[in-house]
Length: 506
Image (cartoon, rainbow, N blue to C red; front, side, top):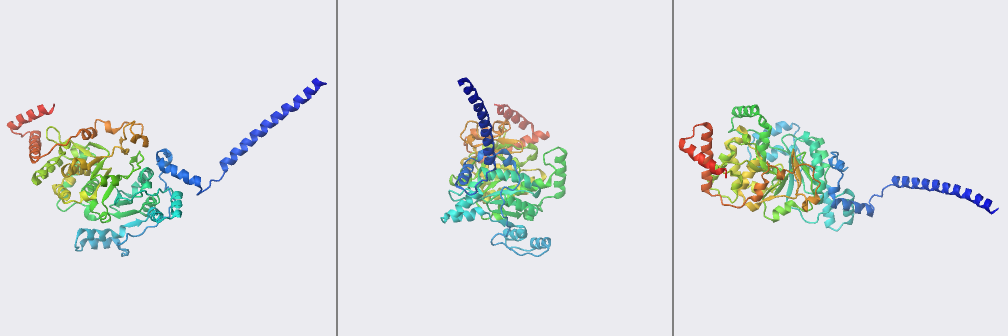
């Protein structure tokens, strides 16, 4: 009987165990399903903490989300006029613009403001309003900032703006760039954007851009004087020059619009009426990438450390685009008796321009410096030399050579902690550096160490006085080489050239 009892108890125990296992499995499945379908609590303390974590760790942003070009925030975009600007215009805007351009004005700024006023629009972002409320002690504004993903500012801003020269068709390329710029930097500081175009911006462009930032945004047209061939340039000769460069395969050699862009960035963008009250600018172009989190304010750094110009990539210009830029620059220095403590950065051993320049598609700089009489005089000199149209002078070498002439070495800054890509050129902080830990850099060569980079030359540069005599000697060598190249150099110059070339090899 005991054996039978044991067998009778064993059967129910096995069945019970199986039933229990099945029951437990069902409970696990039901619980996991419930957790997955559980509604998220909006505005809870945990949500705020998670938002705060994202603010501090933007390098963990998912790659797909970073590349998404759809508007990030469902902001209610309203476009209006800039305070103090005209608000009413006639129905025929083209006739209005023609009438303004042909009328006499006290100064160019007033003329340009009246000319472009119908095409200037402004969106006031939420960041400034909410920040003002927080400064007044509002906890509701702080909660709203957390809900919107806006980081309260910890310090006052510099008088600065992002400046973007762009066309309507480049919208989607810029939205990807803007997403990175906001996540990496501007969501902490809320600097405004200024968009410039030689044509009116479309409603689609303005609403899409304004919906992707909580900062103030201004859209403006470029005055005709800033984007046209000046009267002192022979347009027929300029057209033939473009045809010749295009036939030789020079990049953008046949493009007139590219030349307008280079001339505008060299001598006019800082004169635009919407930028007249701005002191600092950060130039941004569509389609570029920013790889690193930036938890400090580069505008404030530039201002407080006495810097006036900055860069992230230094490389060599295409020689065929600037055949006489160096000659004219030396002549300008000679006539004005300009000296420098680092102009040697741009000079080869033979006295020629080594083509090094700071790539201006990224630059943070002082608008006050560009508005200075010295820079204005240099640009006017180059403009009347007609190289923007007869050749294809770029704004990057113009800005760079101007900095070499007019700024001290310690007024120019290299932002080593900013990872950046433009076209096929990408750079990042050195692997293993503290700055690199805040970056998500691509697995590709760093242009900083490329043979085409001028950064090693910059890092090795030592201050050395460049005198009036150095300018005169460099100009003499350049002119002698020009004669040698055309086969009409005097015999004595040929011998001297051989001597310089021999020692220049060391």
